[in-house]
Length: 117
Image 1 (cartoon, rainbow, N blue to C red):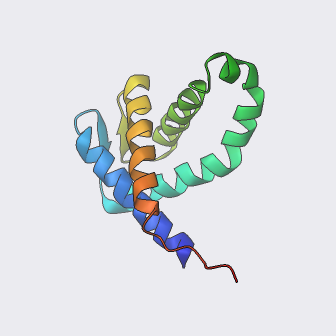
Image 2: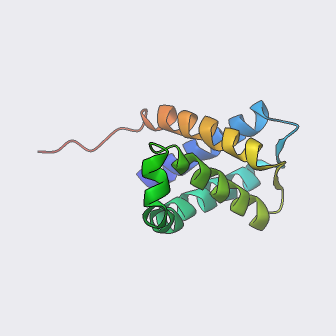
């Protein structure tokens, strides 16, 4: 149940970010936003750890800022595979991933955590 709630909150964050960056990031419908949130979550769980390990030297040299480049690349990858989701370029993908990360972290704070006994 908690996963579904987090996915729906991420979908709202995707919709809000798409609305903020409207002419440069386009999301056709709620269904597309849900698919974008699911695909980005899947990419973050599967592909991001591999890319982080492969780019450790660059990440260290850039003080971790290269991780935003990885997030933008995953956004462009989602743009490539999902019809109805369009991002104009790398700069807009970078801004989209930055705003999305901020909104998702704010919204996920409202999801109650399990109390440990």
